[in-house]
Length: 152
Image (cartoon, rainbow, N blue to C red):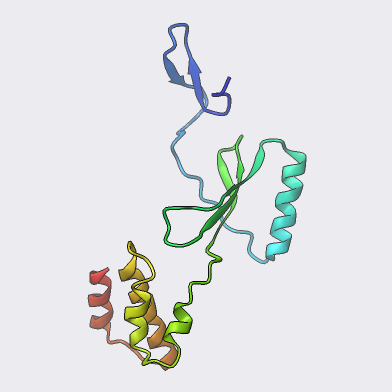
């Protein structure tokens, strides 16, 4: 049956109920990352688990089409435990905004980067303004930070 991985049981009438022993099927399990392990070590651990357990799956969603540009999401999930072991988002498409901003006034980067996406222009302009402040060693007054955060 296609519902074998879900915490659902069906009675004779076809009504669905939660399987016993499931405390909260909609809860989120937050796990701490393996501090001190390199990406290669973490990847090797995941590959060993996948080889040993049939319920650990590596899922790739590529491309994610609702993002301006190319994006890929790679997830390794433990389907039996209902938790993610590893998740990565990648946006490998070079779009050239860095080249457009070269040789220009740094403040232009705020307006150029805000055109990178029709959905999240405010976030891109905020990030580029923050990057300019860090690159130039500028300290924003505390109230300036509050005002900027309110604008998001």
